[in-house]
Image (tube, rainbow, N blue to C red; front, top):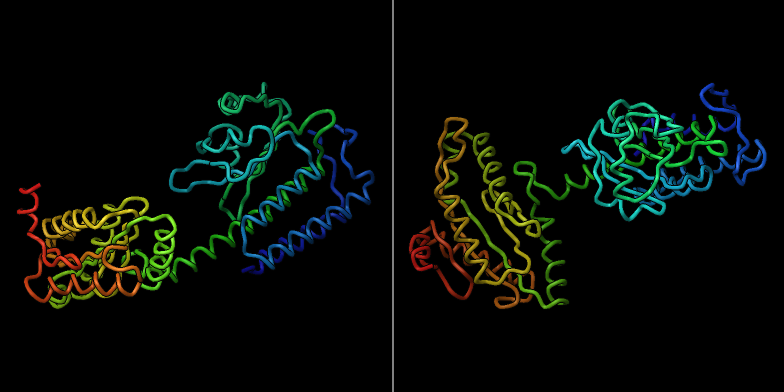
Length: 391
């Protein structure tokens, strides 16, 4: 997963321990309180750190393992009161605490910091390292975190975790600056560790993208049939263990071929994407939506009885048949669906049995009247208007 740029950064950090670091005027010369007694021992320790992290990056794709190793080395060499790794939520433009170590770590779980807010937010926004020996003298300091954690932050060192020109997060050390605290060499080590964190995070992002390509459908971004098989097996195991019900809803778009024949396959693909988005929007967080193939979709509804699944299918039937699709593109396409429902364990206790029964119920509708809902071992149900008036 490492490109030449990553390899170069690793080699630079391995060599850094031998070159020494020039003094920086903003830091006073202080007596260290570290376990490393001499400069030579310190250099050996740093080289060992870089070798360990380099090995972790090249031998493991487990992000959590690499990040925890980095945080352990921060504790070993730098000894702050509290330290944390904040990652950037790109969609919300907020930092959240991915890892936190120290007395206040539990209280930080739900804390979010906006871009530009506080020291960490400023570092994420500007991509620059900040050393604050006295937070009372820095207007950027965000006291609300202390109020949440019931701690007293006297000093902060914050380093951006950057890959190329993108800030992925911030490593922040609390109460590590002072007469017995932080010196220029510490800063160089911390910045080197942040580079390792950036490489690990970027590797993880690439792995996730590749994984998504194997489990998601390109056209709709829904999960694909291969992943459905895995999720269905997992849900059967979970439902057996905890005595849960769950249901499948199969959806087939009636006469979809006419859309492709009339408007072309590109329009057909965009229509499938729009319908996929609509299905996702009507799912709960625990539900799964799949493109099964062609113009067929499947919903897996955990902890859902057959009766409730039928109600879901009826709502989806109404949604699809009453919506005007691709209206923003000026096409105003209308469709009707055929839907089939099967449930665990009332209809079947096996993956193959559930898939067959839900598919069979859907085709019962499709091969007779279309534009309706059927359920396994029940048959075609009354149409939506009848069902609604009865409800």
